[in-house]
Length: 321
Image 1 (tube, helix red, strand yellow):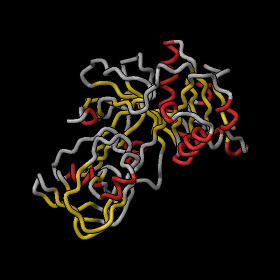
Image 2 (cartoon, helix red, strand yellow; image 1 turned 120 degrees about the vertical axis):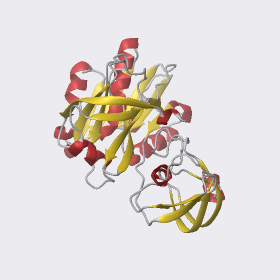
Image 3 (spheres, one colour; image 1 turned 180 degrees about the vertical axis):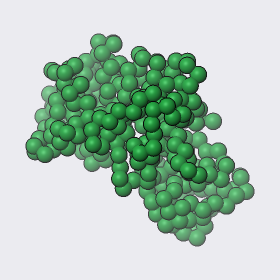
Image 4 (cartoon, helix red, strand yellow; image 1 turned 90 degrees about the horizontal axis):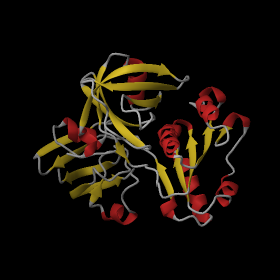
């Protein structure tokens, strides 16, 4: 069993509207014990019982890692998504009993860095809230550049600028403000590490610009959880389990495997960690790879698939599950 499937029974302690799109949720353990330790950048997978369907979505922990009394997450509502964020916004209320995973960190701070340069876009601010608190306890050096659509949708801007007026810089899209990334990267001291969390375009831009300015890949860190894409239904043979399943239009391959009662490991459920990588035993058709994990050679070889986010279009697919 992977760390991502180890469970914590929790109760919803608070549900607080942050702005028109974002709501914060605070979870405490039902048994009254302390939460497991975590470090800034970690996420938890929230289990949602939505009728006869179970949804599992990853969310970054934004609370203080030094405070083990509770975990907090923020969820951005997505009206055209697959329903997880709408479930959280519309159905979850204080007192509800839920299940979450133990924390997993795929976006940790490199504590060898002399400085931490943080770049956030929209709801991508959440892992930085925990990282900033962690660095505050340790006296770490950081600088945050945070891009938001409007002042009304700037989640936690007031809190951040009040606590760190000289270290937090906010940019508003509706005011035509933008991060001057080239200038920013050229002015950093030796030993600085870059961290970026936000939309895919922002993440790609930061990586591309950093490479162009000579930054080593090992000093540039990013996190993006991809949402599984909808698509045409397809059938899959699970060889070890001797089962044939159908993946629905709005269902991921991983969800379909789990619904069939077959255990499959995961950590992020967003195509980034590699934990759910599955061997392909046979296929007749085309893979739709949506992950960050497989190399181009692996994708062309058609021997691997990441069932959390990737799909298939064809007559036959046989997996080693």
